[in-house]
Image (cartoon, rainbow, N blue to C red; front, side, top):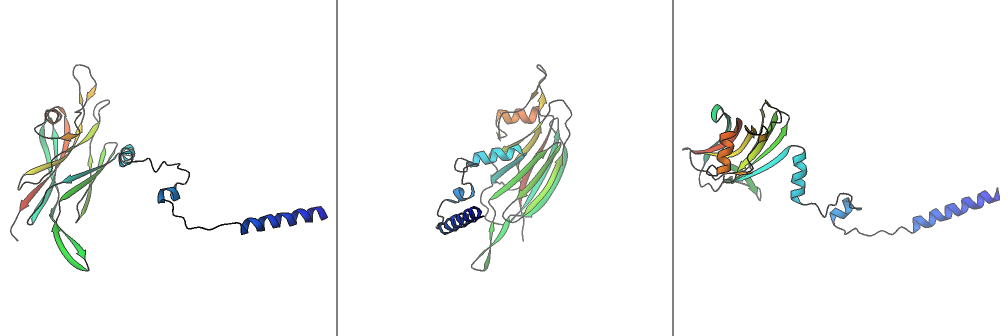
Length: 224
C-alpha cells in the first residue's frame, strides 16, 4: 500500500512540474508555418501554377480577359454560338449588361467602367458549367454536349486579344471537339492554347473540329 501511495505521489509531482514548466510566447512565425508546422503540404514550395494545375484535375479552369478602356457607357451582349462542320447552327444571347460598376470610397458611391471579364469553367462528362463575372455581376449557365466517337474529347481554348471594338463580336473562348485523323484513325486536336483568327493553328481548329462552341461579347453604344 505504501509503495502504491509513493508512486501516486511521485506521479502527481511530475504532472505538477510539467504544468509549471509550460512557457508561453507570442508566435511570430509565418502563417504557413502555423497552419502546416510539419510541412506536410509543402506550403512554401507551392506556386500559383501548381494550384491551377491541381484545379485542372477537378475540371476547373479560370480565364481572365483584359478588354481595354471605355470612356462612355455601352451595352455588353454576351453570345454563345454553336458550330457544326464550320457552320453556325445556333446562336444564343446569354445575357446583356452595361459596362459600368459602382464602388464606394469614404461612404461615397462612385461609378466607373469595367476593364476585364473573368470566365470560370468546370468540365464534367458531357457537361460544361460556365460562370462569367465582372466587377458588377455574376452569371452562370451550362453547355450540354455529346461524345459521338471513341476517344473523342472536348477542349477549352482562349483568345489572346479580347480588346473591345464597337459593334464587333469579340471572341473569348472556344470549347471544341477533337477530330479523327483519317490516315491513322486517332483523335487529333490543335496544340495552340491561345487563339488568334489570323493564326494557322486557330484556322485548323475551326476548320477541322466537327463541333464547337464559341463565347463572345459585343460592345454596343447607345444614347441615354
